Amino acid sequence: MGKPNRVEIVGKLAELFQARGYTGAGMAEISATTGLGRGSLYHLFPDGKAQMMREVLAAVEHDFQAAVVAPLESGDIAGMFAGILTFFDHGEKQSIWGKLVHDAAARDFAPEVQEHFNTWRAALTKALLSLGVDRGLAASLSERTLSGVEGTLTLAAGFDDAGALSRGLRTMSAEVTNAISAASGSATGSAGRLARSQKPTGKPAAESTAKPANRAPRKSAAKSASKKASKAK
Image (cartoon, rainbow, N blue to C red):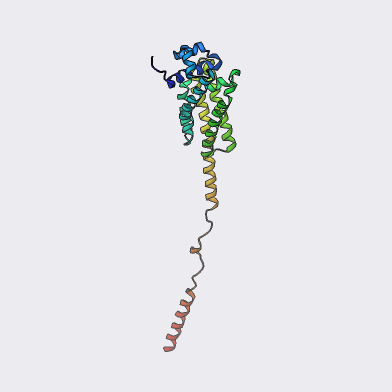
């Protein structure tokens, strides 16, 4: 038997922890899922199940960043929603972070969970701000989106209805799109008002109706010539 592929083992553990949670996945099930005995598992993960979960979190977070957070860094919020749908396998996959939040035995992983949500929220808020959304509304939309995703994933699992995720994402996407459109319209309106306020009123100075200063001298010269002609007669 060859040396176990650590990446493959962590991938199998990720699927198990996402489905069963940290407490729900016992060592017997871990062994059955990975195809490794306890001795081999502890050889790979000397700190036991806690080390397995930390490595799973690191791997899953890496994939989440690529699918969901990376689009936000270029302001692609639609790409974020598409990435969420793909990452969670259209609602078939559950949130490992959500399961850890509700697992009293998983408190040691609170820093990783908080970092996950903080990074995602900050990226979404920054993307919304870059598109002109007000800071307060951007922060509120970000939190509602994160809680909405976690909530619809819970419903998808509870109702055994994977479609709950895509339906929820459509609603969230519409709310975010409306906020961006409103911000864009407000900015356009402000620009228009500014342009109108700066529009010149009255006639330009170059088109003044005042008579040119050199007309009077030409008129005087004509009169003088006329007088000279009369005297000559």
